[in-house]
Image (cartoon, rainbow, N blue to C red; front, top):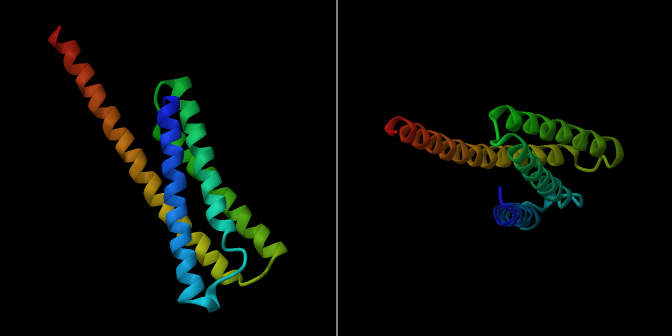
Length: 142
């Protein structure tokens, strides 16, 4: 990934996180105020940081290995899931405020980002497969 592409992807992650975070937070705050909790902003911030770190790690893997593999993606996903569980555990241990809603919101964000990241990797794999097919076709024509 070039520096420009990496910056563009990080900007996209920031924009998506901002839109989802503000929309869901606004809905909770205005329509369902009984479900809003003070620590809500920590969830979008957590997933924003995880998205930036994931981009950095996958970019590094691509630079070292030439391509991002599904194994590397799944390993990063596992780490993200583990960190989400640790985040939930820390919240439950230290804050204990509106725990059910915090857990539900954290899970909702997790599934939203799981879908977005899976779609992104699908697009990268589709592009990679198309590139490999083109390279193979060029080799057979020689």
